[in-house]
Image 1: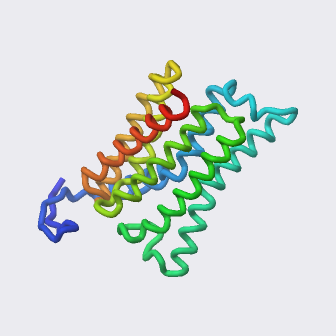
Image 2: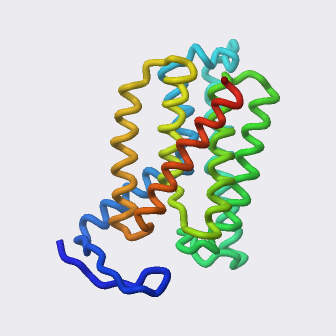
Length: 231
C-alpha cells in the first residue's frame, strides 16, 4: 500500500494511505449497505424476529398486518421522509450533493431528521404500545442526531458510526438495564461497526477523530435515553 500527499480541511499537507480501486469500491458498497438511515428498520426487524413477545401490543387478529404496518411506519419515518427531504433540498440547490460531503450540506438534513425522530419517539411514547426500550431507542436516535447537528459546526461527525454506535448502545442498554443476554449480537455488532468505520476511512470520507466521536455520540445517547425512560 502506497502513500499519497493530500491537503486536509485546514489546508495542511499530510500523508494518507492510497488504497487500490477494488478496495475503495468494496468500501463504497459497504457504506451504502450500512447507511444509518437503514438502522431503525434493521433494529425493528431484529426485535420482532428475536424477542417478539415484547411487541405483543402490536398484535391483533391480523398479527402479520400489524407488524407490516410497524415496518412501514418505521421505513417511512427513517428512510422515506429523509430521502425525500434530501432530494427536495438538492432540487432547490440548498445542498450541493446528495452524498452530503460538506458540513454545510448536512444542515438541512440534520434539522429534518431531528424533527422526524422526535415525532417517532413522541408518537410511540404517547401510544404506549411499544416497550420502553424500543421507544427509548428512538429517543436515543433523536438525542444523537441533535448532538451531531451541534458538533457539525466544528467537525464532520461520521453519521455511519453514530448510527452503529447507537446499535451498540441499544444492546448495552438491554444488557445492563433489562439484564438480557445479548452478548452474541453485541460481538457481531462490534465486528460490523469496525468494518463500517474502516470503509469510511478507506474512502477518506472522515478523519479518525470524526469516526471515534461518532461512536461515542451514538453509544452515550442510547445509554442516556435508556436511563431516562427505562431506568
